[in-house]
Length: 110
Ligand SMILES: [Zn+2]
Image (cartoon, rainbow, N blue to C red; front, side):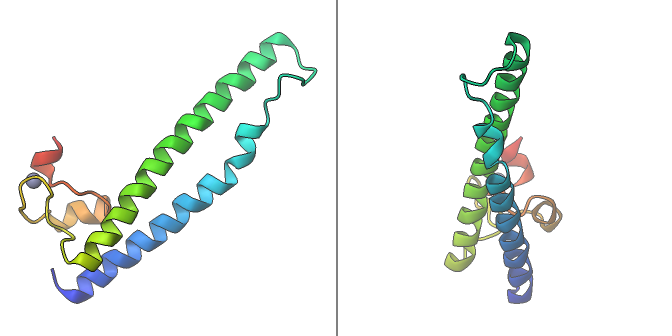
């Protein structure tokens, strides 16, 4: 991959990492809202616990994605970015545009 292309993907990834970190931080309060001492009714407590679970699941997937973004940034500095980790073939650029953190080509991710 050309250096100016690499730089563009690096920028995409850095922006993405920032956005993911921001949504992790802004979601912090969501998981703290449910306390069992809260004088709320039984039903609303169930609702609250459910949304807490959803928000925890969301956070977990954001964290996983952030981890992949960091790995992709790492592979840019190592010079292995844009190469499928499974088949060692180049990953299509359109795919990298859509999912810049992916370590797999279309065929291997299927
Ligand atoms: Zn592959």
